[in-house]
Image (cartoon, rainbow, N blue to C red; front, top):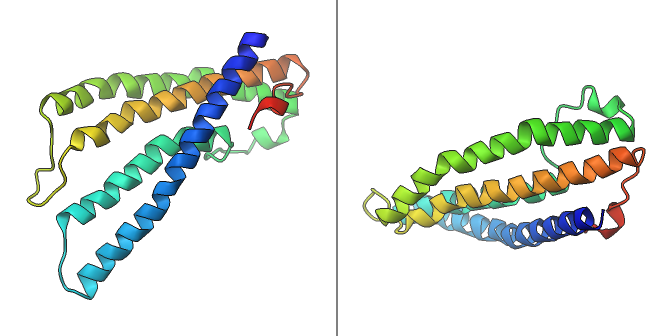
Length: 178
């Protein structure tokens, strides 16, 4: 139980810190979009680098923030049956869902992206567009990093849910979570 508590708290703290850090990128994204809109519609000019920077920032927010969203139970869920379950039933559904659906999908995404990322690093991939951003391989590396964070959070969620199920629906690990 001590090892499970340590693991759950470690992963929760990690994803909390990553999520808070990544949340600051939303301000940068808003600023970048405002600059793009201003230059495009007021100055009648456009920059490929600024447009690419918008989707680079958005992709980073999405990929690195997904585990934070999962940690806070703010992900998309179809609650047709789940909302009527007891806390113990919800814990069982979370545990099974994590182990059978979330973790295999995350592992598959990590595995499927590895050659994509390695090839991008080996080529020192840059934007194919004139005036585009360099170092596209850094953005592509966010795919396995983001899914690794999701995988860790899924394991944490499965462990927490399993312990909650064993304790009759009471989350005994909750007091130590952030």
